[in-house]
Image 1: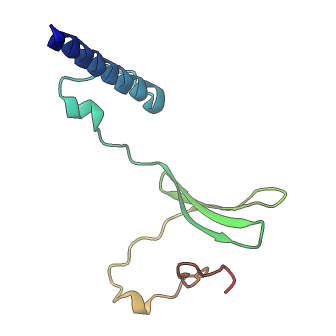
Image 2 (image 1 turned 180 degrees about the vertical axis):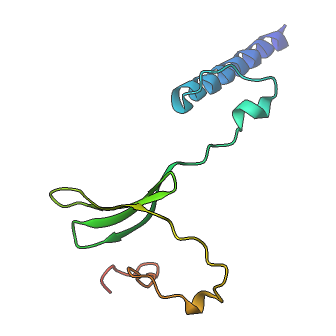
Image 3 (image 1 turned 90 degrees about the vertical axis):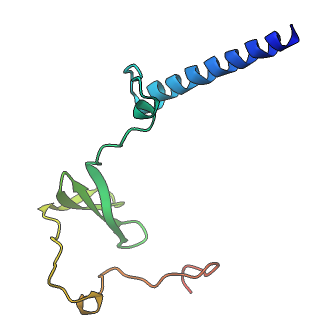
Length: 125
């Protein structure tokens, strides 16, 4: 009779875990569809391709930043952090990969490049 008590506790914990997983899916992921028969299909499904992303960002001064944003394959250059955020350029086509380039040595260095810092090195050293 003692093992029946522990079996009941185990079933109760499994049901609570399943309910917590479904609540997580609904609250965090916003998915209210019923789970499919294959367990891995609804739990580990592929994420959609992101439509919006920050491509590059660079500091102009202590307050302002230049941010290059890509949305649906079109890039936009924005300056943020001042009294007003400014859209500098829109509709920039992303650069196409150049298959005729010989290597990285022939390419020009990036405009806002800085050398990497070592662990423990101060910002202005």
